[in-house]
Length: 142
Image (tube, rainbow, N blue to C red; front, side, top):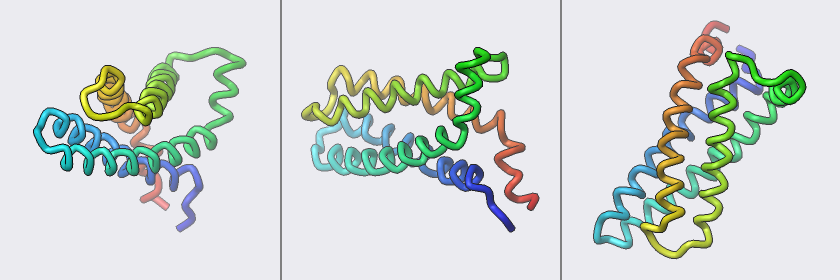
């Protein structure tokens, strides 16, 4: 079975997105608790999962560079609204996540923004995956 580079990256993104989302939720919940050690452990897990997700996401965007170039030349189409939205939310999530690296402790304003944007990212990711389920599952038809 020959697996294309794009499908391999897509399949790597699925568990990484789940891991990043789950650890982000746990990190947020730990921020409301009393245990700094628990918060710290979830923070480390979230940073690792999110960095792996970021790397895979960059490769994913790179493999779809032709789509992004056509978007710049032709403008957006009706079919591209969710993809464009997830791209913007992905960038906002990354930017606020990087900004958090310079923040000490839990419950910061930028952390709350990152959390809310991350929730939106999770929603758009689900929609993005569901809309492409046929292509996503094509790996099993080979």
